[in-house]
Length: 123
Length: 233
Image (cartoon, rainbow over all chains, first blue to last red; front, side, top):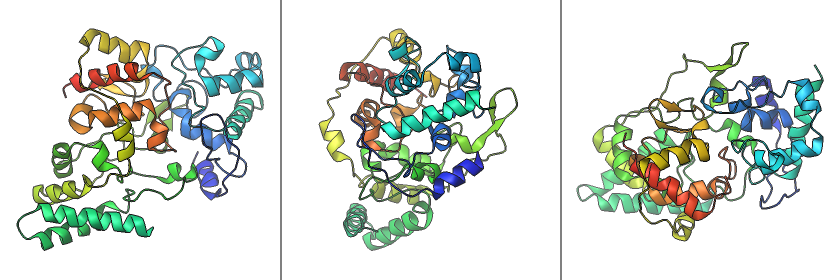
């Protein structure tokens, strides 16, 4: 994770894409999905993406394991985008997954979707 | 540093000094000296002129204080600055302190909480100066929260079960997640209008916050704030 942090700190560009109410502060010229995952997701989904983050034991519903190839393969990229942007209820999942569309712009969510695909299915 | 920000800090310090009847010049010097020497290296004392890249959040090590006067209760500031204790159980940016055990994450218990401890007199002077830093007054003025109550049992269920706040926050010393700031003592620490405004739209306060916008209407937010304000440490 330290390397990922170092990588993102090196990123200094500011993108111009906007998304819904978010005025858009892109993470970089190209959003860094791994760094965004570290910033917004690992608290619950874990540093390894296994659903065992530091908050997981305090959550009534086990956070999704993003390294579960079977579960993740059953979801389209559009569904993953939707659940990140609009929250769990948007795909009939837990309200404990918040809607991140106010914190993240479109390119950042796309970068997270791409990172989820790496986590689940490239190892 | 932006000239406007410099001017606002200077005017805040002057006003802080003016509030101290004894030796105001010395109080001014003390407040300025402490803020610059002990606070500015970790805390942002000036509001950013433009939105800043998210990478800023990754390197930030302490909360911004340019809206301290919109956020904190002065009495709590004096007390805390003279006897500081952790507000974030997992640190301000928990990811720096996470250890992967191979079967889930845990916190590195070797990480020590470290914040300068001020004398009571220093804490009083600094608190006065901080309370004059109000870069988000417009948000407070736009907030509609009015004090009220909620049945404790409903408040607990709302916080934990319905809104899931306890995934990240503790509303008691024995219940709640680790990544967010403690909330069982928020009534002492935070202004009710700040809680209301921040919960409604945290991104308006901090574009790089990791607190999500929970898309609640104002009455729902106000119920949560009623509950938090009723909690005792």
